[in-house]
Amino acid sequence: MIRKILKFIGKLILYFFGISIGLVILFKFVPVPFTPLMFIRSVEKIGTDEKIIWKHDWLSIDEMSINIQKAVIASEDGKFTSHNGFDIKAIQKAYTNNQKGKKIKGGSTISQQTAKNVFLWPGRSYIRKGLEAYFTVLIELIWGKERIMEVYLNSIEMGNGIYGIEAASQHWFNKPAKNLTKNEAAAIAAILPNPRKFKAENGSNYIERRKNAIKRQMNFYNNPDYKKN
Image (tube, rainbow, N blue to C red; front, side, top):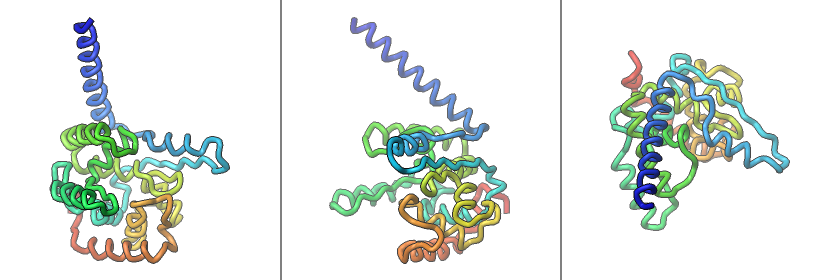
C-alpha cells in the first residue's frame, strides 16, 4: 500500500513538472488568454448587484508606450532589469517590517507578480509563495525580461474588471497604450497597490503624490536593457 501511494505521489509530481514547464514554454510564444484572478473576480460578483466586467486586450510590447514600461519599473521593481527574479534586499526589508508589526508590505518583483498573476491565485500561504518562487525561476529562465514585462503589462489588474495596459489606457484616458504620455503612464502605475480602489484620472492626493514620485524616478531610467535604444 505504501509503495502504491509513493508511486502515485511520484506520478503527480512528474505530471506537475511536465504540465507547468509545458505551460511556461507555451506562453513564451502564445498570448495569455486569461488569468486565475480574472475568473476569481467574476465569480465574486455572482449573486451581487455588481455588473461583471472583463476587459482584456492583448498587446505586443512593441505597441506599448515605453513610458508605461518605465513607470511600472519605477513604481514596482526598480531592479527589474538586473535581478534574477528576486530582490533579496526588498524581501528582507519586507520581512523585517512585517515582523515589527507594521503594515504588511511585500517584496515581490515584477517577475514574481507575473508568475502569480498567470499561474496562481491570490494569497499569502507558504505553499503559494513556494509555487510562486518556482514559476518565477521558470519564467526568468525561459521567457527573459522582455517577455516577462510584456505578459505582466497584459495580465495585471488595473481597475475594476480592467486587465492589461491596453484596456487600462482605453478605460482611463480613451487612447491606445502606445500613445500614453509620461504623466498618464505614471498615473496608471500609481494605482497598482489597489487598482479597484484608486483612480488613475482625477485621483486622490495620495495617488497624485505617488504619480509625481514615479515621474521623478522615471527620469533616472533610459530605455530598459531589453529595448534597443
